[in-house]
Image (cartoon, rainbow, N blue to C red; front, side):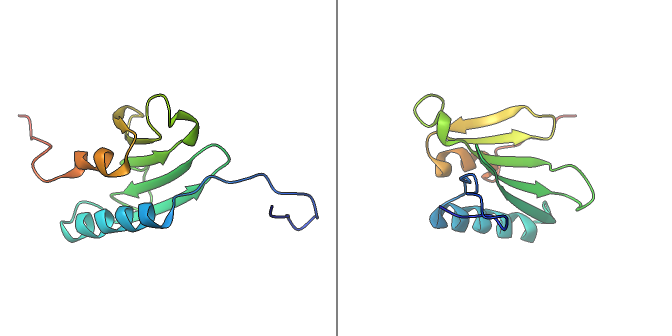
Length: 110
């Protein structure tokens, strides 16, 4: 268990595993190369881990990819959340959830 500077035990933090981070960063690199994303942030919090992606650094994230271990047996630990807070995809496997970003999944509507 980790200890904070005051000597009290720190609360456990949820974070992405190495292979999950590698997959997220591969996706990020692909989307940056396509000109879709510009910046990212990773947060490890008490109940969940979050990978946020931005079109511009000063804005709200356009997507949040969350890992919530408490939901692993129910709806699935992983979710992609859109800018308005709407859950776009949820599942048990990160790879399955990230398929929402595959080329051709989004269509432009006039």
